[in-house]
Image (cartoon, rainbow, N blue to C red; front, top):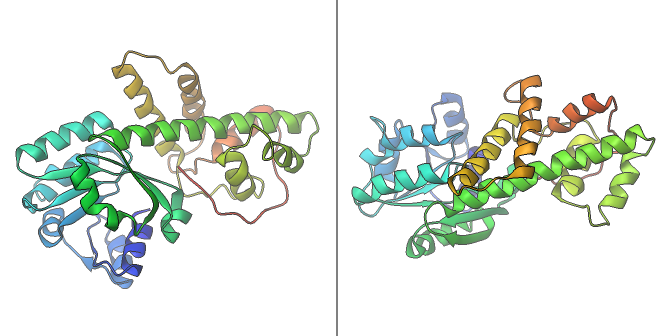
Length: 295
């Protein structure tokens, strides 16, 4: 996602500097016009706006507050834009630290997957001070078609986790429904034709099944372990409010079981293959041409 967003910014005429612990990833970005920065601090000192797209909250914290972290290069005019899928509580804690040092932050995670990152049509959900959001909204609009201020700091990460909770649930339950239909002798392509013109339709049935599952590609670009992480975040949010996500928690157990059986880094659409193995069926059909949406 980070490389696609970087390339989209460059195509829109935005000057971009990059830092990545992976030297090859930085070289690839340099090849398309990005400037290489050797530390996060150097990146923050050279650019007024710095974004992060990282696997989890602990890595974000290290990149921001570590020995060569962003905080050592930021100024009073800097604005940190945290675009990872992260824990809202961690985001609020990090914001408090930055605010105490006179720095600014918004959380602005994205949804839409690799294809939408590539064509600049992501949904971006931003949390933070409204004036900070308004300052960078024109910049974010270069990579996102739907850029929405959803509330105070942490609100972006909250709605992102809840959105992915819905996405994971619809994918798994659609997989179960179609696997059961196949076991009963139904054609999965015809099942999808019915579902996608009926009340059971979703992004999973309309996009992921024809684009990633019927054709047996299973390569959406978003992993099983990241989906488990996001579902766990949603459960943590509920726990802080002393409420139980009964359906989502049951769904999380299915995803955890799939992750145990598939290796870390496996595509998240393999949740359907996990279901297929349980039902002893295979869901396949004629490939349709679609744009793939991941979480």
